[in-house]
Amino acid sequence: QVQLQESGPGLVKPSQTLSLTCTVSGGSISSGDYYWSWIRQPPGKGLEWIGYIYYSGSTYYNPSLKSRVTISVDTSKNQFSLKLSSVTAADTAVYYCARTMITFGGVGDAFDIWGQGTMVTVSS
Amino acid sequence: QSVLTQPPSASGTPGQRVTISCSGSSSNIGSNYVYWYQQLPGTAPKLLIYRNNQRPSGVPDRFSGSKSGTSASLAISGLRSEDEADYYCAAWDDSLSGRVVFGGGTKLTVL
Image (cartoon, rainbow over all chains, first blue to last red; front, side, top):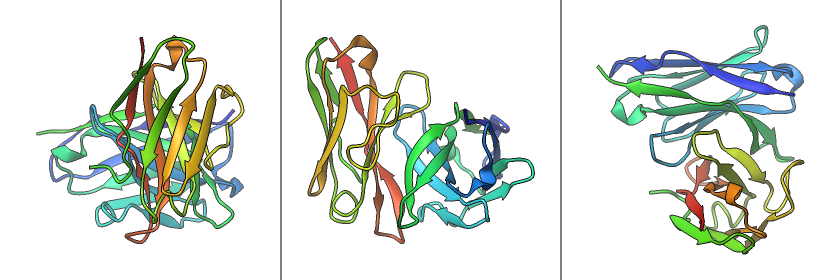
């Protein structure tokens, strides 16, 4: 079965760039049947979608984060990554990667498989 | 402030039927699918309902989803203690060039 695993630093300094990687096992990112998403959850709060990427490299970002977000894919490693620049304390959250179904219209559909999440704290 | 509105809490006793509401607008629920996720304490969210009322394999038929206009509901029948969790609704929103939006979450307590 497909599994996703996030990895990256748990502590990032303010104004620096947060970098995380999601490794997909049990299935291929290049299958073309899914988008691959990043979602975050600040402590004690709700979920926020960050964006998703297709295996071809096409991306779609949350407009509220678009200026600071870059999502990339490495099909040879079956991984996709998140970079969030100019971080502040407000970016402290658990970051999840998720496999994303695709509707007939090509829009992102359900997040059907999630990683366990990784906590990232922004602090000096 | 979440784009989709959910009650912050809900409760029920074992065996009861509870519903959780999710209110949106014409740019999200009114014109797109609704999804529901269950988040047990300390774990990642899990897909419960997709495309308004579809259950992924493995999700018990005690869970059901519905949508009407700009609102949606999640119903849980035969409530069990293991259903105690946070529940989130989500939908695609056509405004601001498009984005996925979530509700603020509903904490379900099984009394």
